Amino acid sequence: MRNIVLFGPPGAGKGTQSEFLVHHYGLVHLSTGDIFRWNIKDKTELGKLAQSYMDQGKLVPDEVTISMLKAEVERNPDAKGFIFDGFPRTTAQAEALDAFLTQREDSIEAMVALLVPEDELKTRLLARAATSGRADDANPEVVQNRIDIYNAETAPVAEFYKSAGKYKAVSGLGSIEEITERLVSAIDD
Ligand code: ADP
Image (cartoon, rainbow, N blue to C red; front, side, top):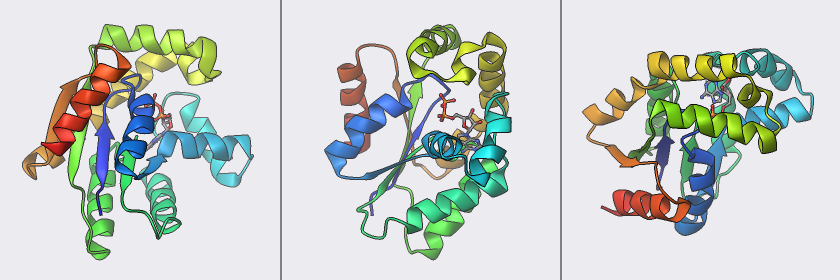
């Protein structure tokens, strides 16, 4: 299997780039943010629980997120591999993913990170609010909270993959096509 973690702060462009990568490599896209939003829309129990955290820009608890992610992987037995987008977001999630994949005699091939300066992230998220309809994009305090939590809890996840020799980073600035090319050459390298 070909499993790739697409990594980066909120607003880095993970969702946009995932669309290209899943087509290019024939993989299944697993975005934990999207899955939570579908659950909110369908008013499921999981959606109700996740919404209270997401509205404040906080992370949904690991236990909930990890079991949801495992179920999604298991729902796709024919997948050639996955693009994990927005997961793992904590070191505990990275460890759980590693253990889960090892159990399945599988592994992560690489983590590719999109590097974008913080000022640019805030500009992008607030601009995206106009079209995304996402309450967590529209409120500057929630945006700041998401970035702060990213720096405190998510950025350290890169170390997990660096120490495994699986970390690659590219600039997330430029045109969508330019960034896609950088990601593809990093992955194929
Ligand atoms: P972005 O990367 O732009 O912040 P996402 O769509 O990936 O947006 O995530 C939106 C929200 O969903 C997060 O702020 C968080 O509340 C929740 N979420 C998504 N993925 C995870 C995760 N792996 N662990 C905990 N919470 C998550």
